[in-house]
Amino acid sequence: MAEAQKTLHITQTRSAIGRKADQGATLKALGLGKIGRTVDHADNPTIRGMIFKIKHLVEVVED
Image 1 (spheres, rainbow, N blue to C red):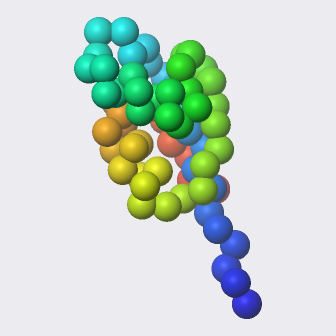
Image 2: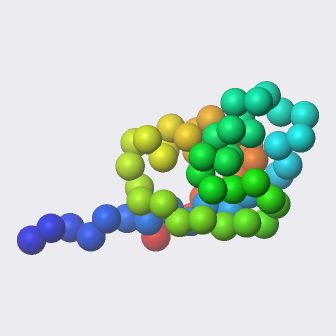
């Protein structure tokens, strides 16, 4: 039986103003862009890598 895929709830907690352009682009790629906005993504290495790049701007809850 296939195991249910885990979900990550990602919430932006800090602004991208004054950060490097690639960090802002990573926020946009995740579907974020405003403080307080939350998105859900499947837990996979690609998303984990994106979160690692902007870990100081977001809060992540595993579900």
